[in-house]
Amino acid sequence: MKVLALIQGMTVAASRYRILQYLPYLEGRGIQTDVREFPRTLGQYARLYQTAADYDCIFVQRKRFHFPFLKPLRQRARRIVYDLDDAVMYKNSLAGRPYSRTRRARFEAMVAASDCVVAGNSFLRDQTLLYNDRVTVIPTSIPADRYSLKDYARTKEVVTIGWIGDHGSIHYLQALQPVFEEIGRLFPGRVELKIICDVFFDCEYIPVRKVMWSEHSEVEELKGIDIGVMPLKDDPWSWGKCGLKILQYFGVGVPAVCTPVGVNRDVVTPGRNGAWAKSHEEWVSALARFIADGELRKRAGLAGRETLERGYTLEVNAPRLVSAITGTGR
Image 1: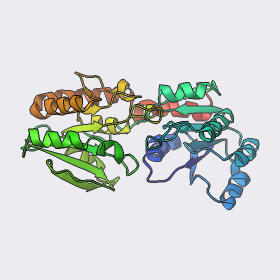
Image 2: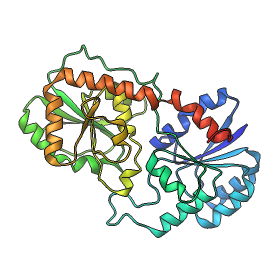
Image 3: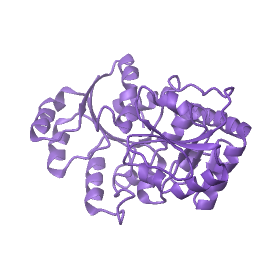
Image 4: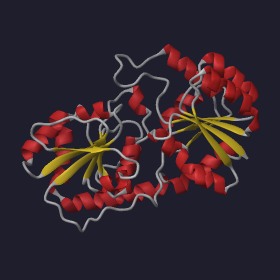
Protein backbone atom coordinates (compact mmCIF):
# COMPACT_ATOMS: atom_id res chain seq x y z
CA MET A 1 0.00 0.00 0.00
CA LYS A 2 1.21 3.51 -0.85
CA VAL A 3 0.29 6.57 1.24
CA LEU A 4 1.01 10.24 0.70
CA ALA A 5 1.11 12.25 3.94
CA LEU A 6 0.58 16.00 3.63
CA ILE A 7 1.92 17.62 6.80
CA GLN A 8 2.39 21.06 8.32
CA GLY A 9 6.17 20.70 8.67
CA MET A 10 8.89 18.25 9.60
CA THR A 11 9.62 20.00 12.93
CA VAL A 12 6.01 20.90 13.80
CA ALA A 13 4.98 19.00 16.93
CA ALA A 14 1.58 18.00 15.53
CA SER A 15 3.21 16.58 12.40
CA ARG A 16 5.83 14.69 14.39
CA TYR A 17 3.43 13.15 16.89
CA ARG A 18 0.37 12.63 14.67
CA ILE A 19 2.06 10.91 11.69
CA LEU A 20 5.86 11.14 11.33
CA GLN A 21 6.63 9.04 14.41
CA TYR A 22 4.45 6.24 12.99
CA LEU A 23 6.34 5.91 9.68
CA PRO A 24 8.63 3.03 10.78
CA TYR A 25 5.60 1.16 12.12
CA LEU A 26 3.68 1.71 8.89
CA GLU A 27 6.63 0.57 6.81
CA GLY A 28 6.89 -2.57 8.92
CA ARG A 29 3.26 -3.35 7.96
CA GLY A 30 3.92 -2.93 4.25
CA ILE A 31 2.64 0.65 4.04
CA GLN A 32 5.03 2.84 2.06
CA THR A 33 4.56 6.48 3.05
CA ASP A 34 5.81 9.50 1.14
CA VAL A 35 5.79 12.80 3.02
CA ARG A 36 5.28 16.30 1.62
CA GLU A 37 4.47 19.59 3.23
CA PHE A 38 0.96 20.83 2.53
CA PRO A 39 0.93 22.57 -0.87
CA ARG A 40 1.30 26.34 -0.88
CA THR A 41 1.81 27.23 -4.55
CA LEU A 42 -0.11 26.45 -7.74
CA GLY A 43 2.83 24.35 -8.87
CA GLN A 44 2.69 22.26 -5.72
CA TYR A 45 -1.06 21.77 -6.12
CA ALA A 46 -0.53 20.72 -9.75
CA ARG A 47 2.08 18.15 -8.68
CA LEU A 48 -0.34 16.81 -6.06
CA TYR A 49 -3.11 16.36 -8.61
CA GLN A 50 -0.74 14.67 -11.06
CA THR A 51 0.40 12.09 -8.51
CA ALA A 52 -2.69 11.63 -6.30
CA ALA A 53 -3.92 8.59 -8.21
CA ASP A 54 -0.56 6.86 -7.64
CA TYR A 55 -1.43 6.48 -3.95
CA ASP A 56 -3.95 4.27 -2.20
CA CYS A 57 -4.51 6.94 0.46
CA ILE A 58 -3.88 10.67 0.91
CA PHE A 59 -3.36 11.42 4.61
CA VAL A 60 -3.98 15.12 5.35
CA GLN A 61 -2.66 16.33 8.68
CA ARG A 62 -4.69 19.21 10.09
CA LYS A 63 -4.68 21.66 7.17
CA ARG A 64 -7.84 22.22 5.13
CA PHE A 65 -7.94 22.75 1.39
CA HIS A 66 -9.34 25.98 0.03
CA PHE A 67 -12.59 25.35 -1.80
CA PRO A 68 -11.25 25.48 -5.41
CA PHE A 69 -8.55 22.92 -4.59
CA LEU A 70 -10.55 20.31 -2.68
CA LYS A 71 -12.81 19.02 -5.45
CA PRO A 72 -9.97 18.15 -7.86
CA LEU A 73 -8.23 16.22 -5.09
CA ARG A 74 -11.41 14.30 -4.25
CA GLN A 75 -11.83 13.40 -7.92
CA ARG A 76 -8.31 11.98 -8.14
CA ALA A 77 -7.70 10.45 -4.71
CA ARG A 78 -8.68 6.85 -4.03
CA ARG A 79 -9.00 7.45 -0.29
CA ILE A 80 -8.63 10.56 1.90
CA VAL A 81 -7.95 10.39 5.63
CA TYR A 82 -8.13 13.71 7.46
CA ASP A 83 -6.38 13.99 10.83
CA LEU A 84 -6.92 16.85 13.27
CA ASP A 85 -5.68 17.58 16.77
CA ASP A 86 -6.90 21.18 17.12
CA ALA A 87 -10.26 22.92 16.97
CA VAL A 88 -9.56 24.22 13.46
CA MET A 89 -13.22 25.13 13.02
CA TYR A 90 -12.72 27.97 15.52
CA LYS A 91 -10.31 30.89 15.84
CA ASN A 92 -7.53 30.53 18.41
CA SER A 93 -7.60 31.83 21.97
CA LEU A 94 -6.04 35.19 21.05
CA ALA A 95 -8.98 36.14 18.85
CA GLY A 96 -11.68 38.41 20.20
CA ARG A 97 -14.40 35.95 19.19
CA PRO A 98 -13.83 32.27 18.45
CA TYR A 99 -16.44 31.90 15.72
CA SER A 100 -15.61 32.04 12.02
CA ARG A 101 -17.98 31.14 9.18
CA THR A 102 -15.04 30.63 6.82
CA ARG A 103 -13.22 28.26 9.17
CA ARG A 104 -16.40 26.32 9.84
CA ALA A 105 -17.21 26.03 6.14
CA ARG A 106 -13.70 24.86 5.21
CA PHE A 107 -13.78 22.33 8.03
CA GLU A 108 -17.18 21.02 6.93
CA ALA A 109 -16.01 20.66 3.33
CA MET A 110 -12.78 18.88 4.30
CA VAL A 111 -14.56 16.49 6.64
CA ALA A 112 -17.37 15.75 4.19
CA ALA A 113 -14.85 14.96 1.44
CA SER A 114 -12.89 12.52 3.61
CA ASP A 115 -13.34 8.75 3.69
CA CYS A 116 -12.25 8.71 7.33
CA VAL A 117 -11.50 11.37 9.93
CA VAL A 118 -9.03 10.76 12.75
CA ALA A 119 -9.83 13.05 15.69
CA GLY A 120 -7.47 13.66 18.58
CA ASN A 121 -10.19 13.80 21.26
CA SER A 122 -13.92 13.41 21.85
CA PHE A 123 -14.69 17.13 21.32
CA LEU A 124 -13.16 17.02 17.85
CA ARG A 125 -15.02 13.77 17.19
CA ASP A 126 -18.33 15.39 18.08
CA GLN A 127 -17.59 18.35 15.81
CA THR A 128 -16.78 15.95 12.98
CA LEU A 129 -19.93 13.87 13.47
CA LEU A 130 -22.00 16.88 12.38
CA TYR A 131 -20.77 16.26 8.82
CA ASN A 132 -19.32 12.73 8.64
CA ASP A 133 -19.94 9.63 10.75
CA ARG A 134 -16.75 7.89 9.60
CA VAL A 135 -14.62 9.16 12.47
CA THR A 136 -12.32 7.47 14.95
CA VAL A 137 -10.63 8.95 18.03
CA ILE A 138 -6.89 8.39 18.25
CA PRO A 139 -5.30 10.51 20.97
CA THR A 140 -2.00 12.23 20.41
CA SER A 141 0.57 9.70 21.61
CA ILE A 142 4.26 9.53 22.40
CA PRO A 143 6.77 6.67 21.99
CA ALA A 144 7.07 5.02 25.39
CA ASP A 145 10.55 3.69 24.65
CA ARG A 146 11.91 7.19 23.94
CA TYR A 147 10.58 8.70 27.16
CA SER A 148 12.29 7.11 30.15
CA LEU A 149 11.63 7.99 33.80
CA LYS A 150 13.59 10.72 35.52
CA ASP A 151 15.96 9.78 38.34
CA TYR A 152 14.00 10.34 41.54
CA ALA A 153 16.99 9.29 43.64
CA ARG A 154 18.74 12.51 42.64
CA THR A 155 18.19 15.19 45.27
CA LYS A 156 17.65 18.81 44.32
CA GLU A 157 17.59 21.90 46.49
CA VAL A 158 15.51 23.86 43.98
CA VAL A 159 12.16 22.59 42.70
CA THR A 160 11.68 23.20 38.97
CA ILE A 161 8.28 24.07 37.52
CA GLY A 162 8.43 23.38 33.80
CA TRP A 163 6.58 24.11 30.58
CA ILE A 164 7.33 22.94 27.04
CA GLY A 165 5.75 24.34 23.89
CA ASP A 166 6.08 26.63 20.91
CA HIS A 167 5.84 30.39 20.58
CA GLY A 168 2.20 30.17 19.52
CA SER A 169 1.17 28.80 22.91
CA ILE A 170 3.39 30.66 25.33
CA HIS A 171 0.68 33.26 25.95
CA TYR A 172 -1.12 30.61 28.04
CA LEU A 173 1.94 30.33 30.28
CA GLN A 174 2.57 34.06 30.45
CA ALA A 175 -0.97 34.55 31.73
CA LEU A 176 0.18 32.67 34.85
CA GLN A 177 3.00 35.12 35.55
CA PRO A 178 1.25 36.50 38.68
CA VAL A 179 0.99 32.92 39.97
CA PHE A 180 4.69 32.31 39.45
CA GLU A 181 5.55 35.61 41.13
CA GLU A 182 3.54 34.64 44.20
CA ILE A 183 5.13 31.17 44.25
CA GLY A 184 8.53 32.82 44.12
CA ARG A 185 7.66 34.97 47.12
CA LEU A 186 6.29 31.96 49.05
CA PHE A 187 9.38 29.81 48.38
CA PRO A 188 12.32 32.20 48.03
CA GLY A 189 15.41 30.43 46.72
CA ARG A 190 13.57 27.07 46.60
CA VAL A 191 11.81 27.14 43.23
CA GLU A 192 12.44 28.10 39.61
CA LEU A 193 10.50 28.23 36.34
CA LYS A 194 11.94 26.42 33.30
CA ILE A 195 10.61 27.33 29.85
CA ILE A 196 11.48 25.01 26.95
CA CYS A 197 10.57 27.01 23.87
CA ASP A 198 12.00 29.48 21.35
CA VAL A 199 10.57 32.58 23.04
CA PHE A 200 10.65 33.51 26.72
CA PHE A 201 9.65 36.02 29.37
CA ASP A 202 11.10 37.11 32.71
CA CYS A 203 9.70 37.17 36.23
CA GLU A 204 10.74 39.36 39.12
CA TYR A 205 10.44 37.01 42.10
CA ILE A 206 11.22 33.61 40.57
CA PRO A 207 14.28 32.68 38.49
CA VAL A 208 13.45 31.72 34.90
CA ARG A 209 15.61 29.16 33.08
CA LYS A 210 15.32 29.66 29.32
CA VAL A 211 15.99 26.52 27.28
CA MET A 212 15.84 26.54 23.50
CA TRP A 213 13.70 23.64 22.34
CA SER A 214 15.45 20.86 20.45
CA GLU A 215 14.00 17.54 19.35
CA HIS A 216 17.24 15.85 20.38
CA SER A 217 17.37 17.31 23.91
CA GLU A 218 13.70 17.71 24.86
CA VAL A 219 13.42 14.44 26.81
CA GLU A 220 16.51 15.15 28.92
CA GLU A 221 15.31 18.69 29.56
CA LEU A 222 11.93 17.35 30.67
CA LYS A 223 13.66 15.02 33.13
CA GLY A 224 15.06 18.12 34.80
CA ILE A 225 11.66 19.45 35.82
CA ASP A 226 9.70 18.41 38.90
CA ILE A 227 6.21 19.76 38.15
CA GLY A 228 4.79 20.21 34.64
CA VAL A 229 2.13 22.81 33.89
CA MET A 230 -0.42 23.14 31.08
CA PRO A 231 -2.56 26.25 31.47
CA LEU A 232 -5.30 26.94 28.93
CA LYS A 233 -8.31 29.16 28.47
CA ASP A 234 -11.79 27.66 28.73
CA ASP A 235 -12.80 28.37 25.14
CA PRO A 236 -13.66 26.38 21.99
CA TRP A 237 -10.09 26.48 20.68
CA SER A 238 -8.73 25.01 23.91
CA TRP A 239 -11.42 22.30 23.98
CA GLY A 240 -9.73 20.83 20.92
CA LYS A 241 -6.28 20.57 22.53
CA CYS A 242 -4.94 17.04 22.83
CA GLY A 243 -2.71 17.30 25.90
CA LEU A 244 0.70 16.62 24.36
CA LYS A 245 2.52 18.59 27.05
CA ILE A 246 0.93 16.54 29.80
CA LEU A 247 1.80 13.28 28.05
CA GLN A 248 5.41 14.42 27.74
CA TYR A 249 5.50 15.19 31.47
CA PHE A 250 3.99 11.79 32.23
CA GLY A 251 6.50 10.14 29.91
CA VAL A 252 9.36 11.11 32.22
CA GLY A 253 7.37 10.59 35.42
CA VAL A 254 6.51 14.21 36.24
CA PRO A 255 3.10 15.22 37.68
CA ALA A 256 1.00 17.79 35.85
CA VAL A 257 -1.00 20.77 37.02
CA CYS A 258 -3.43 21.87 34.32
CA THR A 259 -6.54 23.81 33.45
CA PRO A 260 -9.38 21.23 33.44
CA VAL A 261 -10.67 21.76 29.90
CA GLY A 262 -10.78 19.43 26.92
CA VAL A 263 -8.64 16.31 27.06
CA ASN A 264 -6.84 17.62 30.16
CA ARG A 265 -9.79 16.39 32.20
CA ASP A 266 -9.36 12.91 30.75
CA VAL A 267 -5.64 12.45 31.34
CA VAL A 268 -5.14 14.28 34.65
CA THR A 269 -6.87 12.83 37.71
CA PRO A 270 -6.61 15.12 40.75
CA GLY A 271 -5.09 13.34 43.71
CA ARG A 272 -3.55 10.68 41.49
CA ASN A 273 -1.26 12.02 38.75
CA GLY A 274 -1.64 15.77 39.10
CA ALA A 275 -4.06 18.57 39.89
CA TRP A 276 -6.62 20.83 38.25
CA ALA A 277 -6.49 24.60 38.63
CA LYS A 278 -8.55 27.44 37.21
CA SER A 279 -8.28 30.46 39.49
CA HIS A 280 -5.15 32.21 40.70
CA GLU A 281 -5.69 30.76 44.15
CA GLU A 282 -6.11 27.21 42.82
CA TRP A 283 -2.91 27.44 40.79
CA VAL A 284 -0.91 28.74 43.75
CA SER A 285 -2.37 26.08 46.07
CA ALA A 286 -1.71 23.19 43.68
CA LEU A 287 1.84 24.23 42.88
CA ALA A 288 2.66 24.92 46.53
CA ARG A 289 1.43 21.48 47.53
CA PHE A 290 3.72 19.75 45.04
CA ILE A 291 6.67 22.04 45.80
CA ALA A 292 6.47 21.20 49.50
CA ASP A 293 6.20 17.42 49.13
CA GLY A 294 8.79 15.48 47.13
CA GLU A 295 7.16 12.12 47.81
CA LEU A 296 3.86 13.42 46.49
CA ARG A 297 5.59 14.52 43.29
CA LYS A 298 7.13 11.08 42.87
CA ARG A 299 3.88 9.17 43.47
CA ALA A 300 1.92 11.40 41.12
CA GLY A 301 4.64 11.29 38.48
CA LEU A 302 4.78 7.50 38.48
CA ALA A 303 0.98 7.36 38.31
CA GLY A 304 1.18 9.68 35.30
CA ARG A 305 3.49 7.25 33.57
CA GLU A 306 0.94 4.49 34.20
CA THR A 307 -1.78 6.67 32.66
CA LEU A 308 0.39 7.21 29.60
CA GLU A 309 1.07 3.52 29.10
CA ARG A 310 -2.61 2.59 29.33
CA GLY A 311 -3.73 4.54 26.28
CA TYR A 312 -1.47 7.31 25.05
CA THR A 313 1.58 5.62 23.54
CA LEU A 314 2.60 5.03 19.96
CA GLU A 315 2.73 1.33 20.70
CA VAL A 316 -0.95 1.28 21.77
CA ASN A 317 -2.36 3.50 19.03
CA ALA A 318 -0.30 2.58 15.96
CA PRO A 319 -2.59 -0.37 15.03
CA ARG A 320 -5.59 1.94 15.19
CA LEU A 321 -3.93 4.39 12.81
CA VAL A 322 -3.23 1.54 10.39
CA SER A 323 -6.93 0.63 10.48
CA ALA A 324 -7.91 4.23 9.71
CA ILE A 325 -5.49 4.49 6.80
CA THR A 326 -6.33 1.13 5.26
CA GLY A 327 -10.07 1.29 5.90
CA THR A 328 -10.10 -1.99 7.80
CA GLY A 329 -11.70 -0.53 10.94
CA ARG A 330 -13.70 2.38 12.27
